[in-house]
Amino acid sequence: MGNFVFHLGKYIMLIWRVFSKPEKFSIYRRRLFDEMITLGLDSLGIIMVISVFMGAVITIQTAANIDSAFIPTYTIGFTTRQSTILEFSPTIMALILAGKVGSNIASEIGTMRITEQIDALEIMGVNSSAFLILPKIIAAVLINPFLTIISMFVSIGGGYAIAMFTDIVTVSDYVYGIQLDFKPFHVAYALIKTAVFAFLLTSIPAYQGYYASGSALEVGSASTRGVVYSSIVILVANYVITQLILI
Image (cartoon, rainbow, N blue to C red):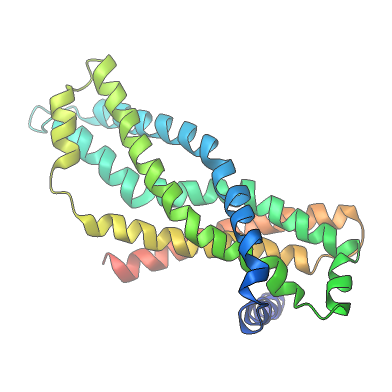
């Protein structure tokens, strides 16, 4: 427990440094766009592949579990939409990005720490924490909601493809289901979660990398810790946000 409190306090102090003494915006402008590409757009391919199969599987599994004549078939489209918007696109995509992006962040910053590049920035009077971490956080918070929206469309499209090419559900029933009782607030809820998850999946691995020490082996350990801890915190935050907003 004491170790947890120690690292929590150290993490909060790092985030305070990141946001309290940022450098001039002109310094960040180019890095911000580079980070948007690295942390967001470079992950678009894997997100689309996972999303299309995720939507297809949800559609098939929902159809397989409807064994009553009293349950209309448009329930398949409705379930696919709700599962995708409320949980799969924001949360599963965040966990995937925590593994892909989080490990890269921890490795990059950890390598800079053990090769004393961060010490060189401090000697030059640069706020190294803000210079290295802030563009990553802002870029992820800005770009990840767009990735989530794309994931939603592609996932629902994966279910639509199942409706088109199989006899599990008709296209008209599927489309009616995804339109039935649609609440735009659910999309807003998903995007709120996405922004919070984006902050967590960048800041926690960055913390692990920033305080890495020793050899390259320690960088690998910091990368692993960053992925594991950010994934756990994302799941906890998912529960808390859902409890606060939806219930």
